[in-house]
Image 1 (spheres, rainbow, N blue to C red):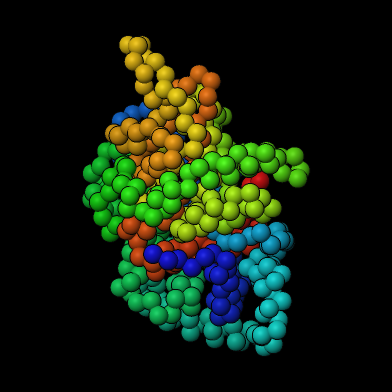
Image 2 (tube, rainbow, N blue to C red; image 1 turned 180 degrees about the vertical axis):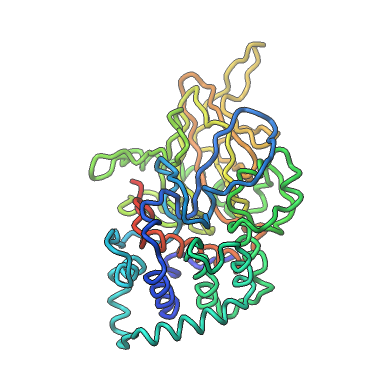
Length: 440
């Protein structure tokens, strides 16, 4: 599967921009200000060490694309703000929301210069209103429009304007996409709005805490905690280039501090990772990190960019001796995670005098151990936890979060990337701190 590089998908067409700007400036409420939710709401839920989940009501208050205005502050750094290339973007003004602020948030300086050469028409209010009405009427009859209309808050002041805009934003970006092709996207929208249903295989699986799912695409079928890495060229490429990747990692260690003296290894989630888990992030929310020394890791970068990176991280994870990531689930069934062992500590001796692997990961009921140059592929909707029991040596893996190319179509992935892009821009326009900003 070939997905267009994110650098070629940065803009939205003019009609979508006008629609976005018009509705946003007219209907957006200042009660959204300082909303602490992430653009895609990633906030892994720490849970007690229990092999089974008790289920319960689905709660998506920290969900993928949370639909209510009255969200609570997620706390912590979180996985920031969705997708989008932001290396050249300036932070938007936190002034009064309006068309000017929104356009600034949606376009970087280069794209504005290009637009100024190709567009000289000034859109007046009547043009915007006609365009708005035409697009809204047409897109409301699509499968996405019908999904949005199922929300009890539809066309009320309590409805998040982003969702009412979504059918038109998708229709203008993907005008040839059919309702059949977008059926599972519509199911994701319904779930995010609180009116969709989970598949039976999710509800009936005690190892997948479905009450913690905040982003769900129906119809992806059966899955397992661990998946066969030989299915993916990504895993093959990583293993074949293991020695090069190790050398590039060591070169990055020499440059681990940026120009301001800040350590590039960070704790990048709202989960409390004081237990020793840090990441040198190469890609954040699907885009590159500004001023990162990619020249030191060209092979690693090329391989990571060969897949549609998802709304989390790709980078080198370090787990300190005698520490681990607490039990949690990530709550998004559209993403998969791959980890390749870069530096794995040697075995340790157990109480019976036997040598056993020192570092492990448990996903659902299955426990695996890392090997240098070998990949583990797994589904993080299952509860999972890690631990490095070695007394003195750390464990290092190359970690990649990406869209589920085993189950999702190319169009579905591109539409979801666009949705995350637009959600990020929408939240940047509302002035949410750190949304879309780099973390390093």
